[in-house]
Structures are given as C-alpha cells and as structure tokens.
Image 1 (tube, rainbow, N blue to C red):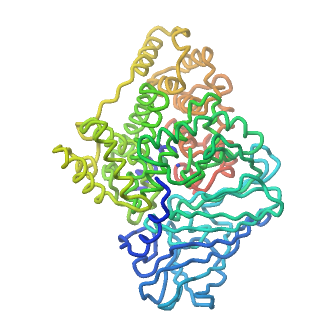
Image 2 (image 1 turned 45 degrees about the horizontal axis):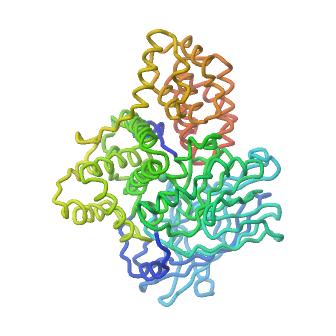
Image 3 (image 1 turned 120 degrees about the vertical axis):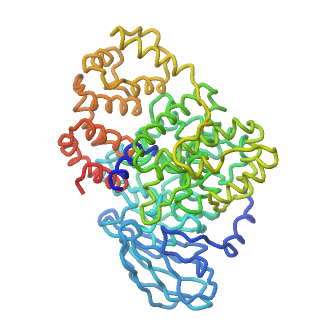
Length: 619
Ligand SMILES: [Zn+2]
C-alpha cells in the first residue's frame, strides 16, 4: 500500500457560464447531499450557505486570526459540524450568543470535527479562531524566497482538503457557499483572493472581497505580497511581483483569445474576470484554478509562450471543476479529465492540431508511466476511485487527467465532434454551479448523447475497470515521429544534424529527451549537451526532463549536479521536484538526494514536502 502510494506520487501531473445570479441561490437549501468520506460535515442536517470572513494576516507571528461568520440552513438539528485541522478555536456564537462547541478526535488526514451547538432557529454562527504553525494550506515566504527579495509573501492552497487548516469550514466539494472577506495585511503588501479583487494597493492595508457565485471550500484562496496588476483585456490580466510583471504580461498575452476560444466551445465564461497571479517558485502546483484568479507557478514563464497550455488548463476549469464540480474526491476525474480534454481543444483552436496532438501524446506517455507505476494496485487505475480512509491526494495522478482525457477523446471519435460539443455544452449548462458524480454523468451521457444517437459505447469499462480499453483512440503526431527518428539516428551514428532540429518546439525537445533509451551513455549525453546546452535551457520543462535523464544515466558534465541541486532548492512545483527525487531513488543515489533535501525542504509547501518526505523515507 505504502509502496504503491509512493509510486503513484512519482508521476504526478501539474500538478491546478453566463452570469445569471438567479441560478446561484435557491439550489443550496433544497439539495440532498451524498455520503462523503473526506469531511465530517453532515450537510443534510445543517449546512453553511455564506461565509463572512474577517481576518488579520500577521507576518511576524505567521498567524492568521479573526472571525468566520456563517449563514446556515438548519433542518431542525441541534448541532452543526464543521471541519477543522490545526486551528485554535477561541469562541463560537450562534445568533450572536456564546454557544458550546467541541472538537472531535484528531485524524491525520481529516483533522477534527468541530461540533457546534445550535438551536432550531439558528441562522448564523460565528467562530473566532487563529491558525497555528502546523497549518498545511498556508506557505509563508521570507523576502529571500520571492522574486523581488524586498518583502515577504503568503499564499494558500486549498485543494483537496486543506482549506480547513486556515478556516474552520464544511470542507466538502458538494457544499457551495458565497463569501465576503475583510483582510488586513501589512501596508506595503496587497491581498488578492478567489473573488472580486483590488487592482492597486491601498493606504491602510485593509482589503474587501466579494465572491457572489457559490463555490466549494477548496476554491477559497488568498495571496498576499508586494504585487502589481497589469491588464491584458477588459476581463483578463496578471498579478506578479514588480520584477516579473512585464515578462508575465508578455507570456500570457493570449489570455483573452483563450477565453474567447473557450466560450466558442462550451458557452459563456461565467465568472466575469479571469486573472492569473504568478507566485514565487515554491508554489506546489503548475496552477490552481481558484475562480477569477488562477494561481500559477513561475516555471511556465519560458519567454516564448511555449508552456501556456497551463493557462488554458486552469481556464478550462472555469467550466469543468469550478462550475460543475466533482461531488466527492472519488469523482476527481470529472474535474481533471474534462479539463485536459477542454484544455487541448482550446490549444487546438489557438495554435492548431499539431500542437494539440503533441500535448495529447505527452499526456499519453505520462499515462503509460503511471500505469507501469500502478501495476501492483490496478484498482487505482480506474477512473472512479474508492479513496475512503485515504488522503484524496492519492487520486491526483495521471489516471484522472490522462485516462480521463483519453476516454473523452475516444468518445469524441466515436460520436463525432459536433455531437460531442453539443453534448458537453448542454452538460455544463445543466449542472452549472452544482456538483455531479460519476453515476449522474453516465446517465446524462446515456440519455443525451449515446441513446439519442443510437450509439453503443463501452463507458462502464472505461470508468469502472482498470487499465486502458482496447478501443482507445490512437493519437499521432508527425512531429513526434520525426523526433523519434532523429533520436534513433543519433544513437546509431553518434552524430546529429543540428539544422534539422532548428525549428523544434519545446515539446519536441521534451519528447526527444524523455525517450532516451536506458543504455544511453554519459558520453552521448555530453555530446548532446555540447550541441544543445540542455543543462542551461531557459525552459523549465526541458531542464526538468534533462536533469531526470542526467540523474538516471550518471551524466555529470557541464556542472549539471550543481544545477540540479540549485533547481531543487529554488523550485517547489511538486511534479518537478518528485520527478527528480524519484530519479535519484531509481538510480540508487538516495544519499545525494537526502543531502539536497536538507536545505531544499524549507522552500517547499507542505503539499510538496509531505510527498518528498514519504518518497525519501525521512518523515
Ligand atoms: Zn486541473
């Protein structure tokens, strides 16, 4: 079990609607909630509907403290249960009067239940609390860990079940709330949230936020830093530290075009504003789709827009994930498989089929690696998972993303693109601002796509069986075939025609490096490094796969070992970090890895550190 988990984590992937308010309100009260194993909340008895957060962000003590006031719907219960982990609960009121509360037994992944006494007519509860040093959602960065190196920085990461470590809340993806917030920060810093945001710093350091569309708790997010805003269009723009702002603005300048392409596919963008904040390099994911404000890693700033499919991915989540949310973490593939499919469609609309197929093929290879890693635990290769008693993070791997994608792509090839698009558009519209699970999806699919067109398809096999069904779509890319041929020739002749590679996109280079055979020699790698300077590439994806190969194949030229150590001490993106540490483990160079990790760990968010702790056995 432990081993399987470790292997799953080795190949984690990036790991990151029309505006009619009437859609958003009444549904909350009348809903019946499914049994859910990752939250203590009993929403069918009493459920939160709105949060008013009033907090103070103190960088000196690295503590957030304040009051979370909730509007609730009570179906006659004498208690309401929230989730809480590593929080100091000071006092609780109901309808403005002090009330009793109790914290349940502590569970390592779920934390504690917070049971609050209420009355039948209780409409509001308020919890005064503070975070502690153990919080897992928050990462406090020193000035040294930022791009500008002049001020500290703070960001949160809520998915999957970490929001409960900075706000006491009903932390289930089924429970949607609207929120307001008042956030006090040091005067020289600006706060932004997954909400309506300021575009400039203000004098007193107090910021007001409003999120009027109901969202699940994992999408509540906060970042505080010395940041500035630069618009790309009326509804898109970027936040970053000053020294990064122009670069980020240039890199993401196609954002408005991406929103238009997405709307053309699946209907209006329903969140009004789509901004991206580029965080310091310790951010643990490629991106996180916090509504209205995607959080992103600076590792995608390559200078040539080559890694911006990440923005397309997070934008796609505005439909799949944020608008239509997986009901439980067992249905995570509904969030991610649909998003990868949508992302690749956006990329195709903007940059053509070749680029889209390259992305799809890179994902296909990730999927093969994941299947290999999971061969001892085939149940984890099903799309619908059973994560009861496990951390939902266990399901955040290539199966949800790339098997999910392959299922939808195969379905598209079977039913035809026009039918597929009409179906997806209606699916998003029908389930907007709501949650859905795998079974509801299957009935909707049967009724509205397959049945309607008299098509039979092995949906159940794709979703409930391990591995990849035989009818999987075959994805081809002439560009990649050419890359494979070039690599083969080099391995045979030890010479490479540099002119032939002149126009290669970074994805082609990634494919080239990733496909080195096990017996490639350090001399051959030295020769390639001399020709293409992979060790010093400015594209983080290329350097990451090159470093992986260097570790695996014992290449030590061009000071690559120092570069790898530096990379691991700077970048906290979990996918990159775990790929490299797992390469050290495979190459039986674990002592070197532990040596690097000693200094690097302090730069990682808990999400990354917890994974590497397990991987290196240093917990
Ligand atoms: Zn995603």
